[in-house]
Amino acid sequence: MARLIAMYKKPADAAAFDRYYFAKHVPLAKKFPGLKAYDVSHGPIVTPDGLAPYHLIATLTFDSVDAIQAALSSEQGQAIVADLANFAAAGADVYIVDTKSL
Image 1 (cartoon, rainbow, N blue to C red):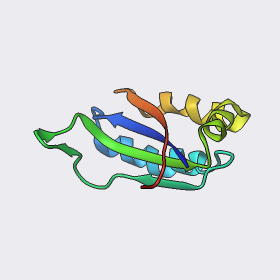
Image 2 (cartoon, rainbow, N blue to C red; image 1 turned 60 degrees about the vertical axis):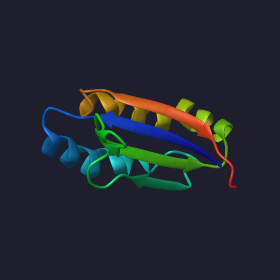
Image 3 (cartoon, rainbow, N blue to C red; image 1 turned 120 degrees about the vertical axis):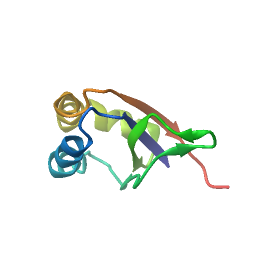
Image 4 (cartoon, one colour; image 1 turned 45 degrees about the vertical axis):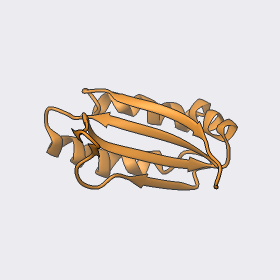
């Protein structure tokens, strides 16, 4: 398995972010080719030292890193990435990781 992790920085208007994210972006992102699972954080994001600078973390699961790269380069994937400009003005850190169960 592999995961795409999007860590959205705290927006100026959290309510507006949430409205757009859940009403528009999630339905769009669920159309990623090869997507196996889509999870989002719920509630405050904390570190051992206190609050993190993130508002929301999304974890999208695919079969492999190659599947993530193919999804991102697809027409649908490009539309999903372009949609970030519509709600993530504060920025997002995006990571792609290969995983294994222990």
